Image 1: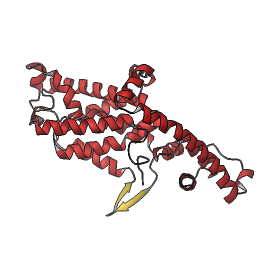
Image 2 (image 1 turned 90 degrees about the vertical axis):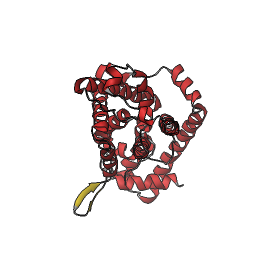
Image 3 (image 1 turned 120 degrees about the horizontal axis):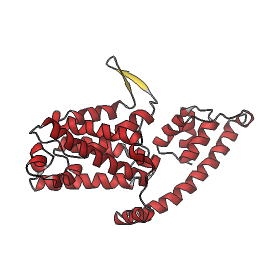
Image 4 (image 1 turned 60 degrees about the vertical axis):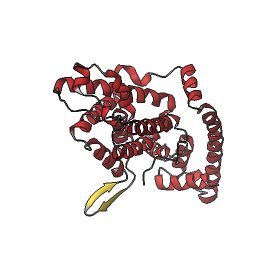
Length: 293
């Protein structure tokens, strides 16, 4: 089954900050009775000019079911932070949150709807469905009750629930998030080339107490990755002595992405796929055996 790699927030400090912040702000708002004040409305924009509400509304969900589903999706999408790195993922988070909020404001002005939009990181969550749909391959399919499903179906189902949880209140933020994700995908304004300066990234890392752990994890991960590659060579030579006599095909990026999404090092994944002749299942077994060595 498809999963987000190793459990926990290993190599995903931005995701960890988002999950903790969203949970704390949601619970705090609920205890103070401010949940009903969250979310943007047409009156906030045109009459009250309460655009400050966008700040807590970006993080805090307005109900417990939305919080549970939303945190599950944010936690799952940590695979993208592991793939592109925390710096670029921070740019993606900031871009999707700001752009989706601007689209929400434009939608409220256009529709002149008096309802309050659902609050929470809808922009980030639904923007993440764009790379999830395009970049994460299906690795298995199955049938249940006569219907066809894949290992990605659970994530789509959770997103569908969140999108329609409050009907128009949640549908509009969800669609705005999808548009923001599409704009990031096509590199609108050259956003995908941007990175936070190293000084700012380092300061933010220290702020959330992740710099020391991430650096130590990174160095240890590199050591483990090199050791795994060496072990993979030894494993294949021992169990598949004829493999060295056969030209090894270059593995497709989709297969590498599949193994990386499971939490494996990209170099080790590439090496395992080459040794397994691009058989993802065999490569997974090789990597797992190297991991438990």
